[in-house]
Length: 469
Image (cartoon, rainbow, N blue to C red; front, side):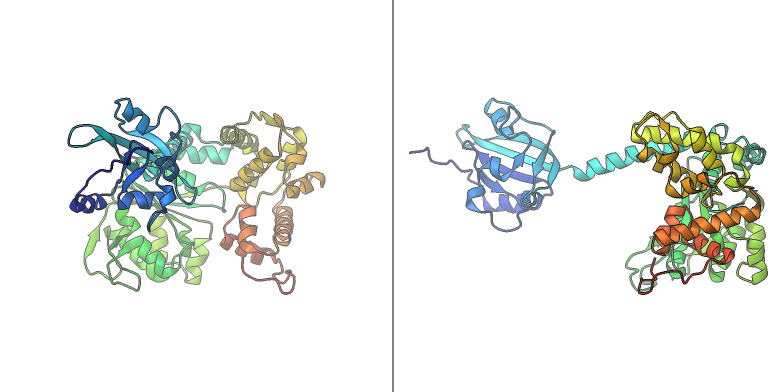
């Protein structure tokens, strides 16, 4: 006959107290049977109701990577050792592994004889996720910091050198800046470089994409709202300008702002103040505004879709970024830059591209500019198994242009090339505009404008296919 199980005699109020704490608590007898689980421990293991009787063996109920090993907490307790902040993995009922921190102590009866073990187990998955996120953010900040040092920015063409030479003086001021250029030309990188090299570098850099949200949501995002301002506003929420106080706000695609929102933005530029949506209290902030657009704002002013007074307030210092096709002498440098980047990301040792590969890229129009070039090199990296990127590693669209021979790089021929590429991508994606814009490296709104400008027929989709992108 086996020895009788010695249970911990615990008052009911002790159980109630243990059920109120957030860490998992369980007791185990000397036969490795679980004698108590608090509510947090049941939740951690995925058991909300009664436990089946056949699960009371601790190495069955609490399966971890230290069970049946010398690291077993109970085995160590029997040897007179307490466990403190020991990290392990526990398997939940659904099979998911949860990282935990384990602390143990001895469980003795009134005579002081060891009768078991008490374990306190803390779920540290959120802590590990936050640590990983902080590490990721720090690494990203380091990479961006190196990339946005003015001396490290890529470009030896005369136009880019002229821009780079002005950036230090622009960064040191708090004057509003308007960066213009086609999608993919690096407007956000320039904006971040201005912030990272400014006296505000230790303060927030807050990005607002003016084209990605509807007008009502965008206004709430920019200015914040108070509880009850609209359906779903269950708490007060600070806006991006509040979050960026003492720092920089980057308004990407500012040309997409509605006229009412433009009025409020103008007030911030002129007086540094605004109200949250639904509030009467005025909030004052100190922010620098850097804006960007791929639209012709002069034309938008003439058409009445953009306020003239706002236009002149945001373009105190204008920076116009040229498209890649107008700075092709920078192409080899940019290719080298992206090869270095993807070598680190993909743990490869690619050294160069072949001459026919480079020639194909030099003949291409790059409607998506530098962002598209990055996507092309990434595609080539995935396909390349050696140290040299070959012509056949390029995307099919680029290969097509590479085989078409030398081209006269005039505006008209580039637009023809661009139109042909856009039509090919639209056909390959089944005229799904979101997917096509991603492949081309441009925003959906830019793709629409190019379709309209180049006269690409929008009725080219197969009948019965959804029009949704």
